[in-house]
Amino acid sequence: MLRRVSDSEVEGVKLLGTFCYNPQAVFPIYFVMRVKKTPAATGYWKKQRPMTGVEAEWDPDQGKYKLYTRYGKEIAGDDVGAYFTFETEEGEQVEVQMGVSFVSIENARLNLDKEQSGKNFEQVLSDARAQWNDDLSRITVEGGTDTQKTVFYTALYHLLIHPNVLQDVNGEYPAMESDQILTTKGTRYTVFSLWDTYRNVHQLLTLVYPERQMEMVRTMLDMYREHGWFPKWELYGRETLTMEGDPSIPVIVDTWMKLSLIHI
Image (cartoon, rainbow, N blue to C red; front, side, top):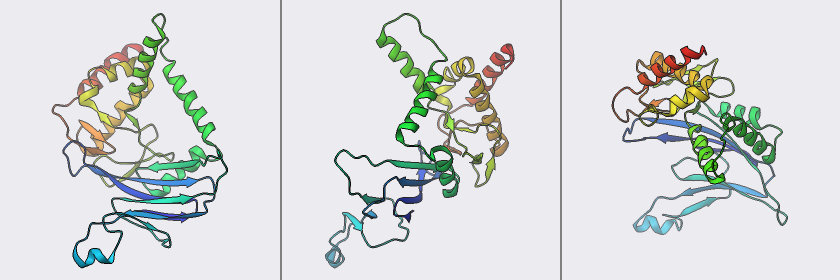
């Protein structure tokens, strides 16, 4: 579903999921998008279903993308979107801001307002660059070639992409395998690809980013309290049940053993 809030803002929701052979493990993602310049025109587009016979003769857009230039209510479907037309000077750039949430459209707007209000693209880029530089600077490499250092820090960057933060700026998040919305006082993580990560990723996180690893373990324990099971391959509050075994257990035990030695 997509709804035009104003000439420069749209909001909506899309259903995602069905990862790795679990057709019921779906979840909604809510979003709010703003353009930072008033457009000359705006509207919707939607992929039309193929038609046959006389019905196809009625609609020249059947099977194609159709523009809706005089329709302002919400629009729904698998292949829909909004378009904006701008009158620009040569070289002018139009900035777009996006807020997302796995709880509600209201929270997506709240995230956008809290995290990006008053900032332009360069400021957001600068903030992100500073945060990534701080994270990657936890390890300092001596020796080696520049190429080898690039490979190392690229791998470290990949290490930190997932698990990622799930909750909104107000602490709300979708409970594990439930329609409930709960609130965390810490950090709620998601995307636990534990079959892939239990051997080495979490061990390195424990050593280099122990405060994050502790929050990830707390998240696993909370998932057990909410759902009755530790996560196997959790994805935005849904259990995909990908792969066998219980990879959460060695992660939790290894974290406890390492951090108990350094008193975190």
